[in-house]
Each structure stands twice: as C-alpha cells, then as structure tokens.
Length: 322
Image 1: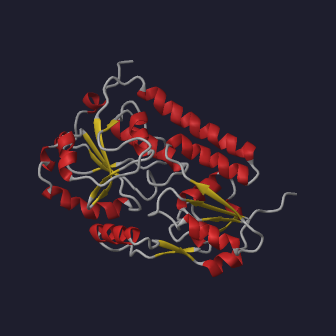
Image 2: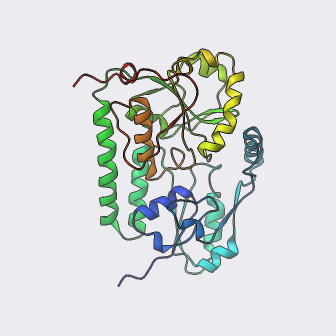
C-alpha cells in the first residue's frame, strides 16, 4: 500500500487542486485564506496575513503598494507549525507577490524541515497553464492517471463553452475589473475567459498581469458589459464599494450601465484563484454575457446584476437562430 503523503498548500487555488485530485485527506496544512472545499478551514494554518482584511479598499491598496515598494512580505509563514506538520510536499507560487508567501521564504524554510520536503512552485499565466498546474500536482503526488481523468472533465467543459461561443455573431465589449478603489483591470487568464465566453475584454490583456486603470480609460472604452470580481472579496464585500461608481464622471452614460449590464460575482471563490474553479468562472461569465446561448450549470451561482433596467436577452446574445 502506498504510504500516505503529507501535503501543505500555501495558496487557496493549490488547496482546491489537491482536493479535486482526491487528495484532500492528505492535506495537513493550509493558508489562513483556504476555505474551499468544506473542511479545509479546520486544518492547521501555516500562514498569517500582515494586511487587515477589514480595511477599506483604498487603504488595502495603499498598504499593499507600500509593502511591495519596501520589499516587505504581505504574508508570513508560521514555521513552527510547518515543522510540526512534517510535510512531504509543499505547493506554493511565485506568480503574484500579493497572493502568497514569497517563494524565497518558502524554500528557505523547507531547507530546515525534516525529511527535505519537495517544494512545487506553480506559476500559471493562462487557463491552459492552470490545467497544466493540475497535472504537475498530480505528477508530484504520484497520481498521473487520476489527474488526466480530472483534466479530461475540465477540458470537456471548456470545449463545450467554446463550441457554443463559436455560434455567436456578436460579442460585447467587456470591462472586467478585479478592484474598484482604485480600479484594476483583470489580467493573466481572465481576458482569455472573456474571449472564450463570447466577449471582448477592452481593458485587460491575455497572459499579462492586471494593472491599475484610470476611470477615464474605462469610460473611453465604452464597455457594453462591466463585470466586477474583486480579488479576495465576496459579493457582499464588493457591494460595499459600488456606491463610489456613482461619482465616476461618465459612468451613468456607459452602454453597460444604461442597459443594466453591470455584474458582480465573488472574486474570492472565482476568477482570482488559478485552480479548477476557473472553469466554473468561465461558465458563470458565459451565462452572464450570453444567457440564451450558455445555460448556467446546476450548482453554480449566477453573476449578480446590479443597477439599471433589464435588457432584452434576445438582443444581447447575438446567437444565430437554430
């Protein structure tokens, strides 16, 4: 019988990857932010945040920028807890300094741990690189065949969305925002999701990091849909920031606002986490952009529409008559 592996995850998306591969019982430690799937929140926490989560969005942005300028960490490892857990495999990332413990700190800590655990660093920049990350974790855990089965299922769902999108004749201009104060475009894999879902991202760039925007740039692009998934925020927390949009010059005249096509969804559970739920994110986004072409799979929450009047779905989908 294969000995049970002891896995520590240092980011929520890695925790979700480990779980979808059927290895949740082998997780022995997670981050303070890991909350999915149910049960992982009861595991020992091996990280702490140095940024107050209840601060206003503008203050969080200021603190993050300040720490990044001074090369001070946003998250720190609880090394004594990590030592007690005696992991065989530590899954981390070096993609985003805002999202996890610095890779250098992880590798330095691993050198002092008993058993010389393997450190697996994930750095996906696109949806299909995220799928490769799942394959990497499966290989590191010695379950390549199981990983390929999971990837077959996820790939089939992506291809189903892509096939429906291919039948569309009109694709709306989309401003996808991952922060509101100040506004940020959403980069990396999200513009790719917008394209696959049947939209044109007018502020984000595929495979490139998110970036700070000016509201004037967003207004100038005249998006027909605004989709908001603030990084690390629930829908409820994001709604707290929405009143500031009323003070943006030209906001009320945007096509998206006039037609009632401003949507909010959880940036904590979807879009910001480069794991298997990016496929859920694609299906949620596709349903919001083209509701008649893309049905919402059972169990997924629809994007929440905020403000405006409800437009005619037949006019918005651009689907070819069947």
